[in-house]
View 1 (cartoon, rainbow, N blue to C red):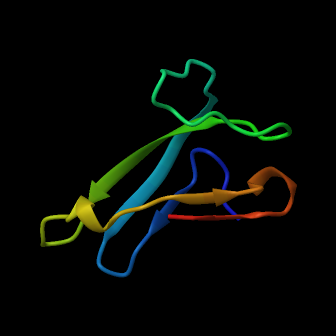
View 2 (tube, one colour):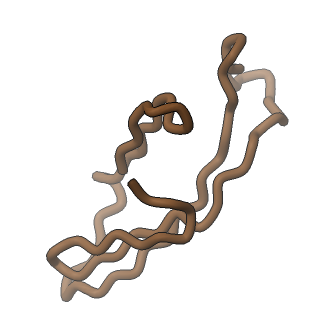
View 3 (tube, rainbow, N blue to C red):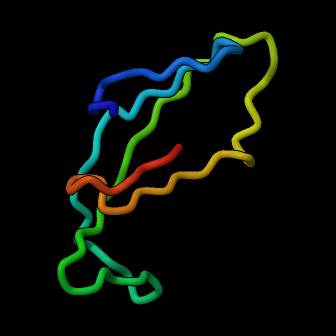
Length: 75
């Protein structure tokens, strides 16, 4: 389990930090709005490339599901 501000370091030297998580309430006409009982949020993530190779962010994704009540989150 990690808290906002904690850093995860991969074996190749890349570090990933979730710098903030904020409630999201301003939806445009093309956005999906959360269902009742769900909360939309925006995460800010910082990458520190301590490896010797460029980072390919095309392979990066985030999954968070019920993370505040024993759910799961994956980066």
